[in-house]
Image (cartoon, rainbow, N blue to C red; front, top):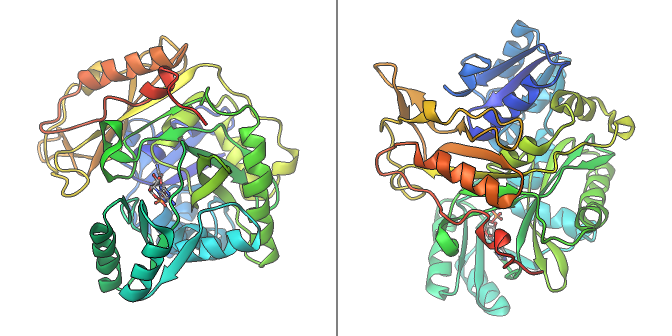
Length: 428
Ligand code: AMP
Ligand code: GLY
């Protein structure tokens, strides 16, 4: 099959790598892609949020399967447009992508399906916000109702800061969701679904805050690892049973089936797993570590989901090795990422990534070719350095050795990705 991946990030780079390794995939194209993706796939320019343009490109290149990476095109209906052109498409419809596009819609679905999640109030004015903050008490959780690229959420003990964020969202025309604070380690579980059947991947843990020890503001994600050796052995089954399957069933019953990947973000609280968020696409950077461990051919899995054939799909196969990814972010990220800085040293981080001992490899996110052809930064999260190891300790060492070889002026990264797990400091 010929595949076309839509998007520009390290998540898409990981998906392109996975597809390229599938023996049934004879060609991988990406649109728009990035300089790293261009080393292994044919990249074509496109406005990723323009459904007609993506559908036309998919027809022009003869794609048999289109995989849509980011949320913005999904919410904009790009999957609908490509499907309408008669091409197998991995990614939910605009209607179904509201599970990510509107936090209040997601809460409504969860309530209807009896899915455990944080209590929440949707507010349209500051008085209602103040009342909800006081009803739940600190720590306060304030969320922009709409898409905000991982930066619409503020969790704080300070009532003034909570009110200020709510006011900024309201002033920008958004409604605001005030939530009960969920305590406990966070888990990301990607559930592949064709709208009926659910096939969970292995869980990963993301690091959302910008600084070590979870200091500073939320980001799109600064690193991830998998597997989660500290997690209860029945965690995945429990999440499919109590969260993913009821949500998929509820969406089908509403006449808006969700097909693609349901990203279930959870907190493992003392009262059991509760949903922190749903996303309608693979997580970034978790995808980089989950796909690093997936042995099952990715193209065949995503095509089965796109075609409604997951019920007959063979059980997934996984590597026993651990995977770690560390995100290299630009100066000023997340508040004001500086771009246009030269990136060097990447040629020294060229592991093959197919096995432990194979060395670290680099997935590109915010990079572009500068005027003289050299590589420069073009976004907040610039690179995702990935490594497999026989265990978490080895994967961490190899990933960080890779990070050390890269030079990007003013860049920063977290130094504690997977560290607590390695030290056995995570308890449920
Ligand atoms: P979201 O965009 O909804 O995933 O939120 C981003 C991050 O904010 C999450 O990964 C959590 O770390 C934190 N967060 C969101 N909602 C809650 C909550 N109800 N309780 C505690 N932390 C939360
Ligand atoms: N890593 C968090 C996300 O993809 O939303």
